[in-house]
Length: 222
Image (cartoon, rainbow, N blue to C red; front, side, top):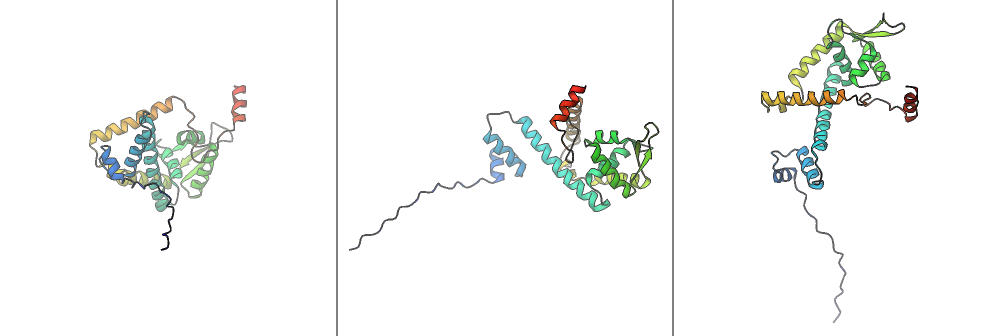
């Protein structure tokens, strides 16, 4: 009789089925089954040795900012053919009240972008007749940025749209008036504190970091 051939079998690690977002969130006592709740549970599981309060809050705010920014950008593009960052220039001019004029330095400091970025934004908005450049009487060779009547109208329409159709509206409707006010006070307090610390907040997505050599020269000269 022929001998039965034996084959060595390679042992494989047993696959552990991944838990769903809802099951992991539920086991941690979280109410829903969203991705952000899964992220929270996973970080708490992986780095339970740390106080993750500040880390997780930063994650929440960054994700919230991304959601808002994407929605805002789409609305601006679809309705007015400009980017969300360019619309913020109109907002910065509009909120100051008549005559809706600011110096470029005021704009790039308020919007946390570079002076070069503001110049490009103003160029684009001027081409669409949403802003215009005026000579600055207090600075020879300088200029002021002023909203046109069309710019005022576009800014007002967008503010009204965001007040009534913001992407965060469905979530805000789930909160009480007291909770909404508390959230606004919290965000305002954190931002005010960070700005009062005079951190290097200028810049933004389109900013170019200052070279280290330039910073050193500037410090030696000061």
